[in-house]
Image (cartoon, rainbow, N blue to C red; front, side, top):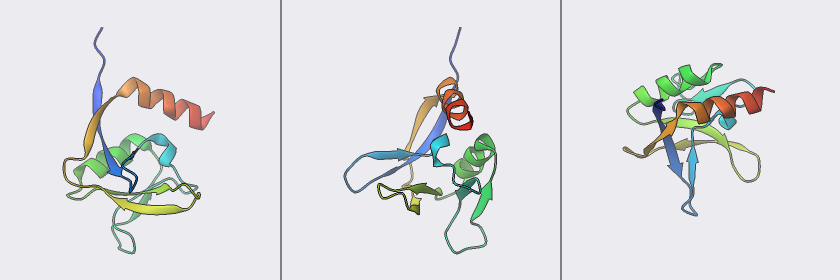
Length: 98
């Protein structure tokens, strides 16, 4: 049995940790991706659709909650992606929707 992997972008925080575009990035209105204050910034309800659109961007940008709980937009650097098992992401989706 093989495990399928998908590429997931991440943002490197000031302290060196990585913030991945994981299902937990969902905000009240959905997953917010794109450049802030631009007509390209939009909410997408489905995680997989949001991930596909994010990966298709020249410069991936998404909102996530910071350590204070405030939602802020982060900009990923080119190449800042890692492969994550689709099964792990599905488990995360189940955990946040339940």
